[in-house]
Image 1 (cartoon, rainbow, N blue to C red):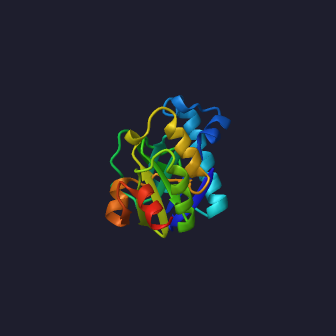
Image 2 (tube, rainbow, N blue to C red):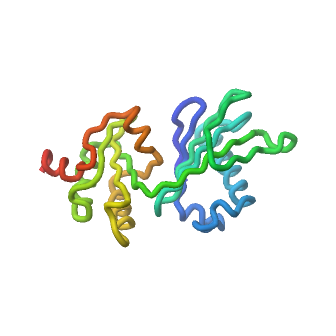
Image 3 (tube, rainbow, N blue to C red):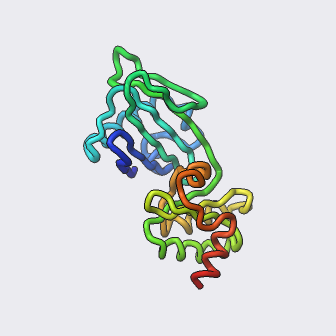
Length: 203
């Protein structure tokens, strides 16, 4: 489990499926094991307080992004009372008498493979390695001081998605950033031809 503070009121948590299995939660049972997920969230908030000083009190907006094969990215935002939370497919609220916080949960699932990199050299290395699978695919964005490579699932077949994830994991970290966010708030460097573009410019 990895945690990062994004702002005074927002943190990001990355959970691998191994993290979930260690807590007795199987990949296919994520949204059905409610008691276990509630305990997991409580453990995460305890860890967020001890590691980041993030106190989970008052209304919380929780965005859960399930990623293909990698696990999930969770964004927790501490909001002001009477806030308008994220629109979502499902929502759960803490019991006002028993819970310290209230939650509105947004659940999202995507098959798009997205990885973030701190160093541009790592992007080039990742693209070279990925080129054996997807010589013409991928989009590259600059966002928040990082480089983000994104691959659409229709470019891959069979076990290629798992192989690509393994390759990219050697150089960067999975992220739940969506294409809409990257295009609106980031800068598009290569769209649809990142692998070949990087190979052409940085051979």
